[in-house]
Image 1: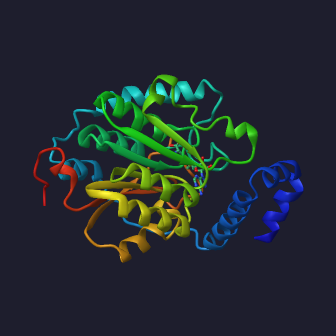
Image 2 (image 1 turned 135 degrees about the vertical axis):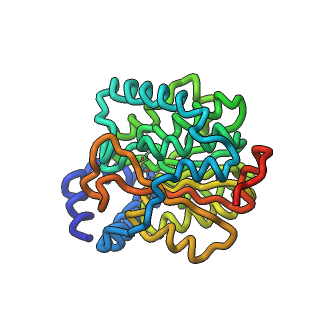
Length: 292
Ligand SMILES: C[S@@+](CC[C@H](N)C(=O)[O-])C[C@H]1O[C@@H](n2cnc3c(N)ncnc32)[C@H](O)[C@@H]1O
């Protein structure tokens, strides 16, 4: 653990000196997160059983038809997102952003369907990287004609990577977007105090149990009844399982990711994400009765 910190200090002394001069507390936060991550990742797999037909089940919860009427527009958008991000020379997919994954097609479809069907007013996400989840949420809000996305991202120190944060989001979608630079630990409580009740929360930042619990606990307290949380990469840490044990009044789906190429680091070469809803489910917001 200390070995990896030392490796970084020896290889990137200028970046560290810059970070130390501009924001020493952020640097300490980051070092602490890195140590926690290496400690937690001694146990690399947190197994959950995925539901093969999670999309049908989600639409049943939503009280809307399946196959989904919004899927064709999603697939057109997905092709456009792939094309436009690759045009920047990005090898989209697993480990494409400083070791982090871009949002995969299944995660993005879940966001698309929830935003299109539920028409949330306040969406909060953590973890932007190239901005695939942000782009899809913003496109869906734009088509709804209402709603705002607030995103928090603590970018890497590498200036080339920092410049790539949010590159999938075109200028014309940014009117509905607030992008906050910093760690979720530092920025999320203040953001939630400003937004008031939220309708949808997306976790895709640092995947440690410590960080996931912190984010989910805060987001859950701000989530209105009927709201939902999407939690990416639940197979990499114990965060969502610990959250389930501590929480009441929820139901959840475990879903298999669909990366553009195999993710060799994952037990199923894909990864898993969860959709967690706060009862009574949002079908109420869509003007329908939740399926039991
Ligand atoms: C998995 S990537 C996000 C992928 C993105 N949602 C997408 O669909 O393309 C994780 C991002 O979270 C950022 N990050 C890491 N630790 C963080 C923290 N503690 N708080 C906020 N963001 C963090 C990383 O720099 C990276 O940009």
